[in-house]
Length: 198
Image 1: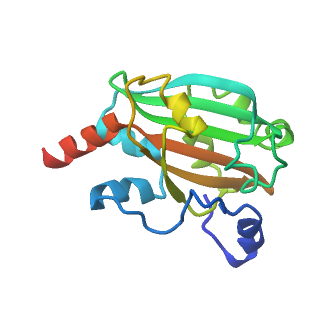
Image 2: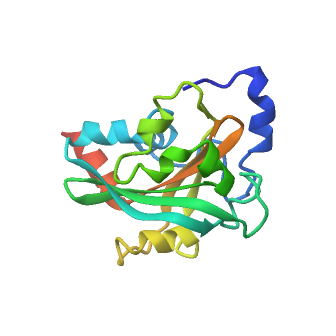
């Protein structure tokens, strides 16, 4: 994957994460949590370091609508239909992260065709192995129960009530953006702290 270079500044400005809920600044989190949130590498790889029993559960793959805090950042009109892929990443059959990915319908047909065939394979197989893919800076937010993605997470854990840490970034290939939002579940933080204290 390419690092940010001056010639990509235009792309970064075009697909910036401008919604006020999201910030690219350091958030108020513990040092250990911040290391996980701000890690620029593959989250899949980091999860596998916690347990080899990693799996991807496909929640949705198909047409959806861009969310209110997504459309401006990915340069799409409001309520535009998009290609949406939602998965749950598990360790030892326990949900750890919900990942929500979107791209335009044109993008999935022409540039991100692999989204059609990933099924239960992690998206990281595409994003972190293709040198033509550019990742724009990460942004962070606390997702509250009123956010649409929080409601999706509650399909997995109906007892959730506290805000959840999430991070978001845009991957660009051939000037076509793919936005990925990763929501960290409480079970992951418990696993991380338990592993850190061991």
